[in-house]
Length: 401
Image 1 (tube, rainbow, N blue to C red):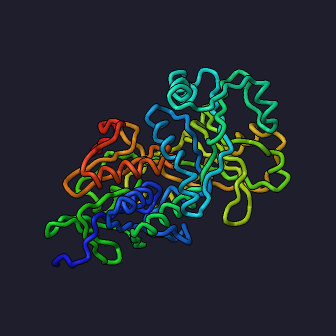
Image 2 (tube, rainbow, N blue to C red):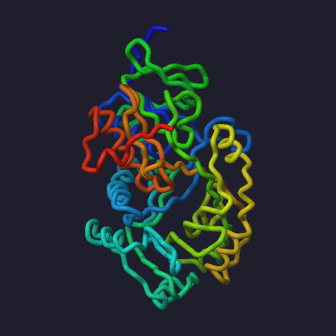
Image 3 (cartoon, rainbow, N blue to C red):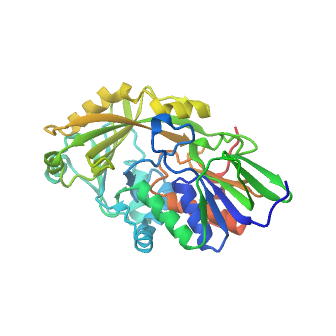
C-alpha cells in the first residue's frame, strides 16, 4: 500500500507516563506528533488488550534518589510540576514530604551515605535525619523501630496522581498541535521510505520516526524488530479503606519508603489516605514480595492484571500496616496488581535501535516521579537525531535479549 499524504514527523507508541511526556515535549518542539495508545480499560477483569502501570491515584515523588542519575531525573521533573499544573489547569502533585527508613543491617540505597551526601550537596535537598524521639513527636501515628535510620525530605517530596499527570501532559501536547489516537499498535515496519505502524483495529499511520514507549508490553506483538532485554516483575499492592476518623489518626503523615527486615516483604512504599474514584479514602502499601515472579509473555501479563493472585500476600501486608499504625481502624482491605519493568543497567532504555525507530522503556519501579524528564530525553533524542544531554547516553542504552 502506498503511503498517503498524512505522514507525521513522529508517532509515539504507548500512552503511559513516559509516552505522554515525550508526546508533549515533541509537540512543543514543533514536531507533528501522533500519540497512539489505549485509554484505561473500564473493566479490568474482561480487558483483552494491554495494561498500564499508571492506573492509580498516587505515586511517590522525591528529589532524593537511589542514585545520582535517578536524583537528577527527579529534580528535572519535580521542578517542572508547578508549570505543568498551571499551564494545563490540572493539579496532580501533593508535596507532603517523604520518609526514607531502613532497619539496622538492611542495605538501602536511600540511606546510603554517598547518596545522602549527593542529594544534600549537589541538589540541595532538605534531607534531615530524625532520631527515634523526633519521629514519635512529629509522626505520632507511626511506630518504627527505635534503632533504624530515618531521613525526612520535606517539600517538594510527596506524591503525584499519575492519571492526572498523564491528562496534563496529553492536554498540553494537544494544545501544541499534537494529536492522539486510542488504539493498540501491533506492528511497526519500514515501507516506502517511512516508518508505518499498524493498530489492532487495522488503521495504519506513517511517520519519519517512531518512538516506542509501551512499557512492560514493548515486546508484545510486533512493535520492535527484536525483543528488548526487559524483565517484567509482578508487584503487589494493598489498599486499606479508612474513615474520617482514620484519616484524622494519620493526619500529617508523609509518604514513606521502607527497607525492612522481613522474610516476605521488601522495598516497601506507603502513601497516606488518598481519595479514589469510588469515593473512599485508602492508605496504600506496595512491596516486593517473596512470591513475586517474572512474567514472560503478553498473555501472562494480561492474566496477572486481570485476575492475578495478589491476595496471596494480603496477610503479610495487612500485618505490616497494623504494625506501623497501631490503633488505626481499617474498614476494609483489598489488593491491587502492577508490573515493574526492569532493565539490565537499572535505568530506562532511551535509545535509537535502528534508523527511524527509538525506544523509551523500562521504569525499574521508579519512573513515575521523573516521567517528564524521561519523556524529554526521548523527545530530544528523536527531535535532534542523537543524544545531547549531560547524562551519559551509555547509561540509557537499549539492550536486546
